[in-house]
Image (cartoon, rainbow, N blue to C red):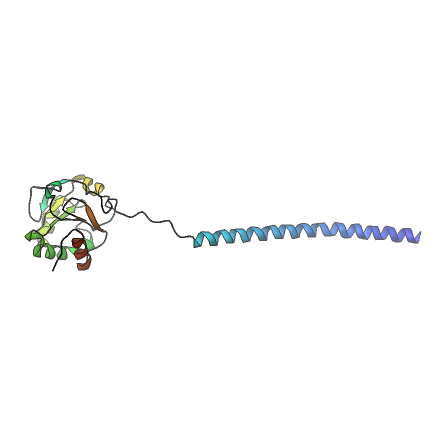
Length: 207
């Protein structure tokens, strides 16, 4: 009887250990699964962080080497008039400056544009046009007088020319060669260096 009792107790102990071990194994499996998931998520985050960002689409939309869209606009300030047509300027290097009276960088670059135009553009080296779309047309003439602008200041009624040139920020300046092809674009306030470089790109070499 004692031996049978011992065998029975041994079986009970083994059965108990087996039952106790199962939840332990289950918990171990769950822990390992969660650990693997965390490692995979962390690895994915690191890969996405280290991957190079997709190339940004350059703006504005008229790429260098493409024809500049034609337009005819009225002159409301500066000199010239009553209208200016880009097509009629074919054969001349053209600089188109998109500006607004309320834009501080636009106001800052006007003296440089006027000085360069007065020294070289007014004598036939290039044509400079300022295009305004955002301000009341009546303010363009007073702006021209205040800054002593002598190049044509045009009013883009309805903003069609701004849309055609995909203007998303001002000031923006296009440099167009004698054949009407865009050769450079500046989407920031011009400096003497960037203005000289843009003019050089359309064949105008300043001394």
